[in-house]
Image (cartoon, rainbow, N blue to C red; front, side, top):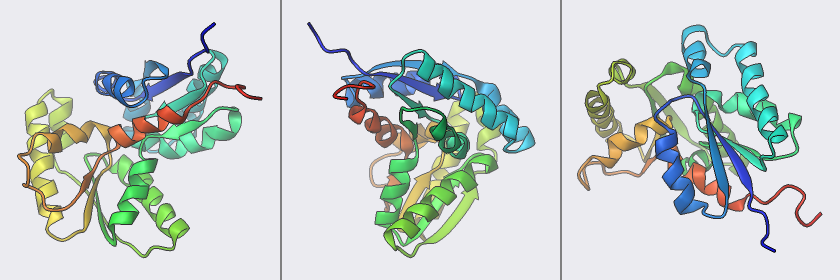
Length: 226
């Protein structure tokens, strides 16, 4: 009799992201079975209205529903939802993972001059706050710069992915000149850097999809070994 495989729920707020994360799960956590949930209104409401308690409650509902559906872990891929994901942890007896947590830990190790780049203001503070917490936890002094990339979100919303990536790449090159490491605050930004020729950016550029997904390799079946 074969052992059951861990089941994980991956929650997205951008419709294009399941196609990004599904192959990463197969590559980096081949021992788990993942299913994807997409609710773009979570991010849309946060962008338009700020981090509302009702949005936190809705994300928490996805987490508790995943637990009820038999999930052994939940991965939230939207950095804007990061603090809401943490708030949902006490509600369930399974891991609720932030996609950007490993990235923040890496950023502190590369410091001390850390730049965080986003296309949305709603993502900057959750990601910057996570970097600060990791710095405090390790006793590391960091100088943090946060900035949004003008026009990139508008271009993506209009379906112009090429323009979105061009703007991010240009801003990334500018920031790299004065920092030790560059953090891309949103999973949807990673492809912009992937398209750059090798050597165009002289400092490490960290994005969350790979390291965030790799966390799933450690998920075990709930109750196994108990």
